[in-house]
Length: 193
Image (tube, rainbow, N blue to C red; front, side):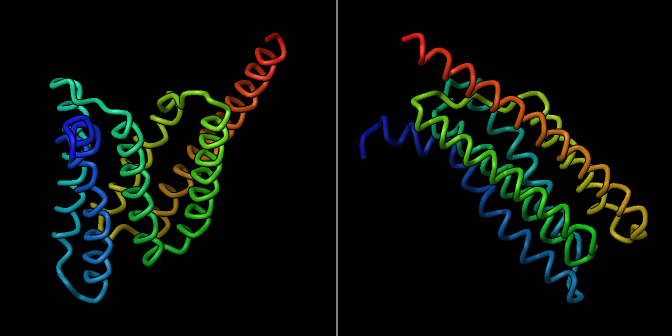
């Protein structure tokens, strides 16, 4: 393997991204085990390590000039997989997570399809918009509150879940508007050339 390949796919921040993907699977196993009577503290530890890794991979990438095109794709994938793992695991405990899980899958599916269409048009995929970042942060906070407050009454958990669904729906609508405007603008530019 040559150095550019290793730098692109196996930089320290990207290795941290792969580690977060593994942690999402470990988290699911530990959460399920906790529902069967196993200890709950490892679940929280895994999420804490994943969050710390997420925080530091970006800092390291920028500080040591290790930002890569693959890392720009891998980091949000690791975020989405981690959030999906939390949503799925909480569905085992709270039934209202099902509509949230469906909304999350529809939103992320839409984002993935639009990103692929955008790439196919020869356009560069931009980073997350402010509302996407707010949604990711808000989802992490609300889901972590539910995780940390393990014996939270279902009606309180449902309030957090509904708040999160409104946040996801707002973000989804904002991204639809963004892509409609972007495609119209790109089509107008193509017609001029």
